[in-house]
Length: 203
Image 1 (cartoon, rainbow, N blue to C red):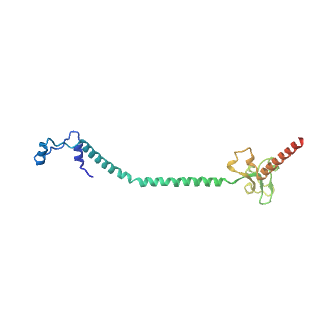
Image 2 (cartoon, rainbow, N blue to C red):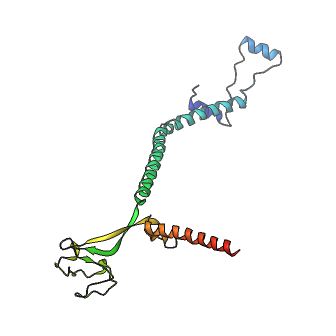
Image 3 (tube, helix red, strand yellow):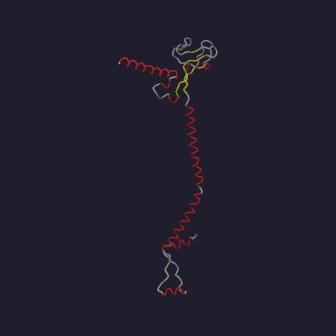
């Protein structure tokens, strides 16, 4: 239903009165004879007209904004993708961290002559005191037999049965090798079994 805004604004004015009805017709004269008179249009009806016109204007203003809803929906659809990408990146990081830690033993072997450097022996010719790890040797250190550079040596490493991220936890057992952990576990079981048997014989 469409209304003229100027007409609606005029009838919504509190000072507006409806036009006087013509009483020249025969029906109007009959009404006057019966003691009835024409009444102005009720204010409630005019208020409803104003409200309907304002609702139509509001719908016309909201309609363009509703056209933006697909874009907003597209932005909402991007959030699940970013969340899935974040979870995938976190899973890849954890999968990469699930590797046993490899540490150097401090020993190294010369690929040219087969000389093995051992920290407990050191190198008396340089001189290098005993207890010095291979990675702690000076950069200009060379093989005492063939004179190979330090960078040519092949360092020996050992694999620790534990992840690198877990090394700061525990009571030092995370830095033990698989053989050391096995010896500790079975040694503890044997010790408690012997203790149990000894207590049984004492009773």
